[in-house]
Amino acid sequence: MSERSGVDWCDSSVNAMMGCDGCELWRVARAEEPGATRREDGSWWLEICYSGVATRKMLSNGPRAGWPVSFDRPQLFSGRIEEAARWKNLRGVMRESKPWLDFMPRVIFLNDMGDTFTASLPLDWLAPSLSVMARSPHLWLILTKRPDRAAEFSRRHTLPSNVWIGTSITSAQDARLRALDRVLAARKFVSFEPVLAGAAKLIEQHPNIAWWIVGGGSGNSPGCEVSDIYDVVDACTRMSVPVFVKQDAASRPGQQGRIRADYWLKQFPCMSPRMSPRIT
Image (cartoon, rainbow, N blue to C red; front, side, top):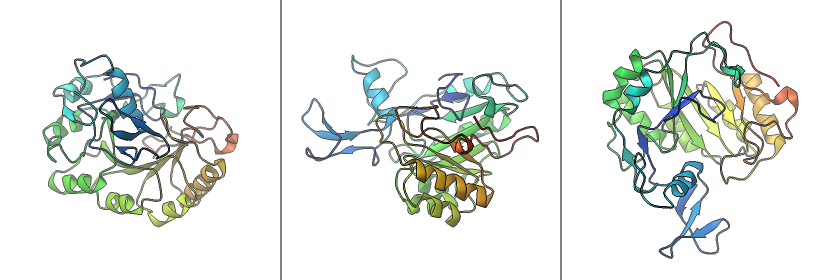
């Protein structure tokens, strides 16, 4: 848990669960596969997920309190959402280091070190905390690579209006976007990293998505072509959809790098009439 997060698009992070069952960024690999690393047991893995890499590094010297046994074995941590719900209300407060969040409620990235809807956890594990989140003054953002399970969860439990659901995609994975379309949430968003050619078409095909976060990738992910970021920003502008540009490469999180100033946008779906797009 951290009241101050290094992630550009949020104030804080809370991990009521940690770990993941795997995805295209964290999986068993072939020995000759680019980027594959060999584990102590002799198996080969592709490990470019930033939260997975951070977890392995943290556990490199043995188990640690407050962390899962391993990233591959997701674990729940009770009480953390309740604690975060008591954090100071930031609505109306200006953020010196993140002025694009000025005047908004505290923006909390829920479970940035895992996947809330990973398959090995019970689908309903988050349900008892929804009322706590609803009563809090904060905005809770959940990012998952399992929007199909998020959609099922949202049909079984009414999501508060201050809980937004997003999906993370790393290629032209239209199946995840179609699943996100089925999620019953007040706002839905997408984190597309690294941005690839053709991303602009996806934006046009999914007009119900309220917000797009784009960048070159995090952790050990590759960068992207700046022209693809431009295409995404142009598509969002045409569709009147907010876009948040994180970075043009994983090595430059939060830095403009090669991106033209007029495309370096830090926009949110409007929460207040005083909010405006950020250009640096």
